[in-house]
Length: 467
Image (tube, rainbow, N blue to C red; front, side, top):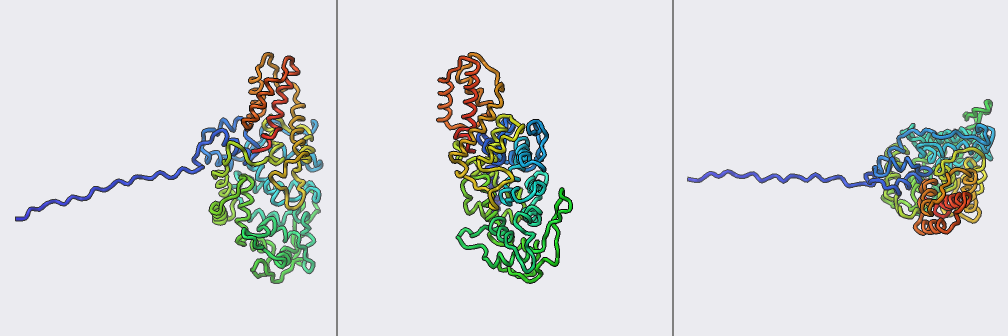
């Protein structure tokens, strides 16, 4: 008789749950990483920023930058004791924006506003201060992704195209049926939307595209009846309603449709992503990263905030963390130094200094804006940078209490704390400590001079020029 045996069921192997890979957004911020993030996404860290974010996740800090509406803290601006009047004084126009850069607790919106000012460069030399204020206000509304989280580049470029400041700056008013003006059409493709060539060096557009695009953009003028509120308006009789062929697409395009044609070009997304990336990161994006950014941008309907999140949490932002590799442009260096020193806008001195350094808000050299990189530093601009730091320190003759018997190391430490503890190379630290040890410091004046020299070299020396 056969014996029945029970068949054993095979044991199920327990699946090990794989932990998701640690991304750079999950990394804990060191103090050096906090400094890097707040210099690249703003105008340098405050003591409070370091205390808040050191040890926290990269993603948490970036999320705060992207979602926290900015507020202005500290002393309100003045020009020699008088309130600023940016609509009537060019100095005050610049100072009003400089004040925002210094006093914004979340600096990213002002940093992005200036990025868009460089991208859509309009100069006060060619338009009224009222138009400039409206223009920058328009850019700021799109740069502030905390208050406007769904802001997108398509809406921005459509608005800029019909902004009175841009219409006047690039002579859009002169563009009419039968007499096309090509200025804005050319810059819309060359600077604002596509770039001249693609990654392979192939031209993105032709002269015929420029002419046809200009026809589509015709018909707009500026109503200046109210000087305080100039507005664009459309005159149908000045618009060319005929069929145009732009970038291979044919139609009776009007202005919004023509702008959309430019944005539909396959090189638009990579071009804009390279420019955004270059604002924050020195080395160019690798092909996979660029494709990911461009794909995110297009999938999310041209929105800016998702792209900024990816850039600001990318490992490349923290490359060369022990030795900063990006030069501070003047519009970052000046408010950054003033923030580090706890100095607010009280006079017009910084305006001239920024002009000498080669970058003054509202006054780009041409429609292509300002260049970045080593071009910022030459004999004249380096002297202007150091001179600005020296002038700020000279205006604070009694800002530090005298400490008789203070050791050289104590003097160094006190000076370092007074300027916000900036990055200094080991060789610089050794040189400054040697100066502190050898400088004569037997009188009150000598001790204060030692402190002032230390602070000037920390902020205005070579190490203070990089971020």
